[in-house]
Each structure stands twice: as C-alpha cells, then as structure tokens.
Length: 404
Image 1 (cartoon, rainbow, N blue to C red):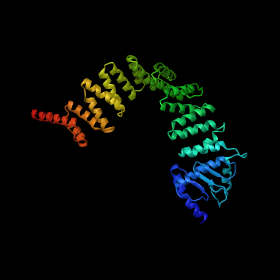
Image 2 (image 1 turned 120 degrees about the vertical axis):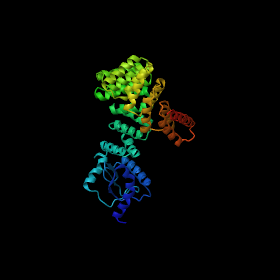
Image 3 (image 1 turned 45 degrees about the vertical axis):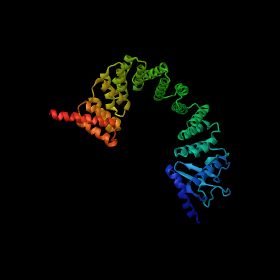
Image 4 (image 1 turned 30 degrees about the vertical axis):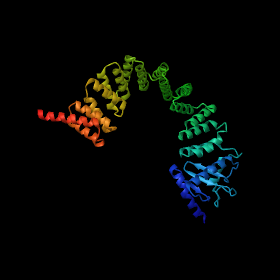
C-alpha cells in the first residue's frame, strides 16, 4: 500500500476523534491501522505518556498538539510508535524539539500551553497526563495544579479540584486560585472554609475595585447563610462605603437582613433608598413588598409584588405572595391579570389554571372561567375540583341569563 493510501486510511478515524474538538490533522505520517476510534485514542494516551518519559530531543518520539492541528511522528525502532516514510520539513523539525530544551529538560511553558489546548478541547485525561508530570517541577507546580483543578472541575470531581487548588496555593497565592477555591467550597456548602480564602483575597492589595466588591458581597452572603448577621452587615457596609451607598446589591441585601431581624422600618427605608437609585429592580420591589406584608400593610405589599412581576414575570415565589395578598384583601383583578400572563409566558399546569379559574369565577368573569376550566379538563377529564367549579360556573351563568 502506498504512503498516500495509508495516510488516507488514517485521516478518517483520527478526524472522527478530533472533529468535535475543532482540531484537525495537519501532518499524518504512517500509523498502525486501528480497528476503531477508541483504540486510536488509547494509542494517543500511551504516546503522550511515553513522550513525557522520553529523554529524546528530536522528532523520534513526538506528539505535538497545537491550537489548530495535531502532528505525529515516531521512532523507527519502537514497535508501538508511528513509522514514517516522509522526512519532517525544517519548520516541523524545529517545532518538534520544543518538547525538551537543548539540555533534555522538559520545556514547561510549551507543555503547559499544550495542556491548556487539550483542556479547551475537552480532553481532560490527556491534559492530566502532561500536568501530572510537570507538577513535580517547583517552577511549574502552581499553574499545573490550577489546570489539574480545572480538569477535575470539568469532570465534576469537586474534591479533587479543591485539593489541587489548595496545592497550587502552597506554591503561589494567586487571585485566580483563591477565587475558584472559595467558589467551589461554597458549592459544597462549606461557607466557613470559603470565608478563609475570601478574607485572604481581601488582603490582596492589588485586587481591583470591582473584584473587591464581588468578594465583599460573597463574604456577606456566606455569613448570612451561616446566620452570622452582624458579620454580614459589616461586609455589606464596607461595600456601600466603597461605592458611596450606590450599589443596589449591597442595599438590597442589607434590607433583607433588616427584614430577617424584623427591623421593618429600617428594611423599608433601605429598600426605598435602592428604589431611588433604580426603580426597575424586581428584587427591590419584592423586598419592599415583603416588608410591608410583615408589617400588615397588605395594600402596599400587593402593589410592590405586582410591580416586581411586571418587571420580571418568572418569579413563582413572588406570584405566590401576590395571590396570597389578593385573597386576604379580597381584591383579585391584578392577581388574575398577572397570573394569566404567567401561565402564557412561563408555564402552565392544572393547579395554576385552577387558581386562575377560581379568580375569574370570583370576579364574575364566567366565560373566561369556562374556557380556563376547559383547558384543565382537556388534560385531566377527572379533575374533581375543576368539575365542581364548572357546575357552579354554569349555574351562575344560567342565572345571569335568566335575570337578563
């Protein structure tokens, strides 16, 4: 078989492995035939390991991965490696020597770059083969551990990701590692451990203002979840002082803390300060509505719950409070309109439609009630409450016709 025929046979299985990664084969030299893509991938894994263990500096044993291509060349003597009938051109020869320097030591920047390419392509196992080798080098340990953490986080193995981020901090206290480690610990529900690293971040003099604000907010939220409200207040207040009392996130969270402490006047004042800065924040209206509800002012609570939903309809918790207030006030017009919008724009279910039908029946909108009930019974013909309400609705409708 000619070299051209062998090369063509190789391109198909290799491209099947690489096409989804936006990589392509640039130079394909003669390879053994593989029965399937899995066999080819295993070969590449083994070759990667052999490369890193090799002391050679030339093209005799090389798998070079770059941003848009994979180049493979091999020893003529190794039974597992590729066999070439084509000499590498000078440019490829020069690139091939980049894996090791002239003294035979691993070229760490080059290998780190290739590990990042593999991670971007989703080849976490291949990347780890490289990173686990270079993590032993003190000068590359910090970034190697960070990239290993990234690979394990991509595989959703959070304990290993956390381990490698902690290891990276032993060698270098980087903002990236501290941020990522705190975020992973919060995902695990370990707020107290996350606070340790967040406080280290706050001690970084070079931390930009926007990052410092994000960290202060995260610290405050972590303390609030841990019921350490005094510390949460302190973090939010630091954020407000840095922004001249003009950051809505800190204002709203501070208002929520006042609400949790039943300090209703302080909560209402804080939420109104937030509204003075921006009237279109749904969370601010929800917080204000909650404060008014806690104080027994159902009318203002209803108004702010409705305003929150007008700005952002997909808030089921706010919708629940709106309907609750409407029943207590016996004022259903706004709730019926917004619930109908919610069903049309977000989601529909028999329970939501039944609630809407009940509001429509109470408002005397018998035709609308009948249509809503028909939707329920089309899905569930045996819906007991819908059948009962349909009979009541029909009776009222008949009485109205007689009275006319």
